[in-house]
Length: 84
Image (cartoon, rainbow, N blue to C red; front, side):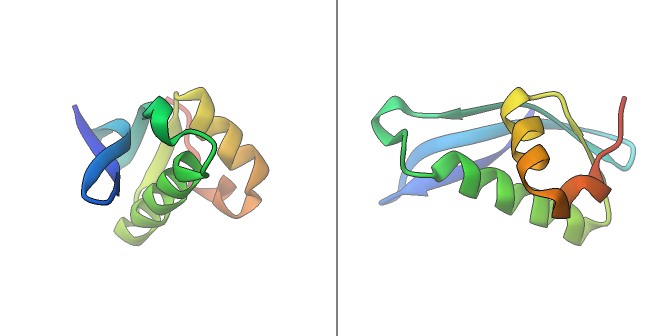
């Protein structure tokens, strides 16, 4: 499993796990440390991950409910979505 990470002052504050399947990035789980919740880090993390996926020319399979919800609120990423 590979992951995107968000750091606060050099310390891991959250991550989004994923695996690659052909040209798809399957996002499976997103987590933000309880000490950093409520600061928008999860949204920033997922937004940056989706931008990276777009730059790579890949699509995304949002198995993680947080990622799916984020994409539902940010229609600009809907074109990236592929289903398993």
